[in-house]
Length: 228
Image (cartoon, rainbow, N blue to C red; front, top):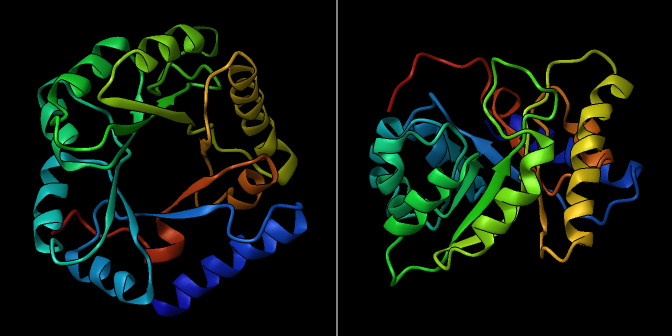
């Protein structure tokens, strides 16, 4: 685990240097879906603090088992209507808001004593019918709706582009997401987050301005059966 964690951090650092990014400007989010508590705790001992989970029923036992650790939990899976309230109470970030209904459910359930829930809008940047996310043309309308909800803090955009071979092909959809993000900033939205890039396209994401990369297999190795 330590070797893989070090290798991923070196990849991030090398990409930051290559593409003129400030050192440490891209955060590493460990996508720990299907990984056991022992793997999370091992990474935490190395200094990893941010972990991403996709399934609430799998995440809750892990969070409870790691309650003694100062971890930051990111929800990176689909926000199902009947799970939104628990997601709002248990997570620090949600990367997958794709409708006003989802946003309102999260905002209503976020406890008043907690800081606003950090959210990213999930954008279907390639228009793939099999993927979740809002169309790029509709992002500004949703962003305005989310910004008006006091228990949410709109941080930025997230996307999972279609798989592509080669750096140039990988960069194209990520560039489109960055340009959309920059356009929203130009309209006055205070966005600071681009959640993009996974194990296979980390370098392309850094090149196009990612601030958070969601890394799973490069950190943990091949994904096991779902376990806690």
